[in-house]
Image (cartoon, rainbow, N blue to C red; front, top):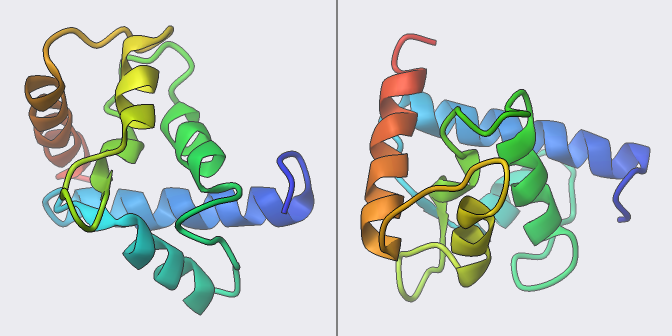
Amino acid sequence: MRKGTLEYEQALDAVVEILRERARRGAEPLSYKDLSDELAGLGHHVPYYKGPMPYLLEDASARDNPDGRLPMLSALVVSQSTRRPSGGFFSLARSEPYERPGDDTALWVRELKDLAEHYAGN
């Protein structure tokens, strides 16, 4: 699967919907493996340990969020072993247009809270 292909765009749509639904239900994180498994159930083969997963998560956070003011959907996806996002999430969160302040833990906790609040009524 390559970025820019129909297959990628369909997988991205699925990632966004899975994460939005998760945010609507209180923003409980899920592991990369769980996300991969949910995608497989929808017909999208996205390994949790390599390939397009980081690009899909980056693009999911950017979807409908060009100025970076909305909460980042990718905050919901965590490592199964640490139960925290990967370093890629924190790098993205500190880059333009997001520019999130704070240490990793504070940034992530705030992002989860903002996701739950933003999607509560949607």
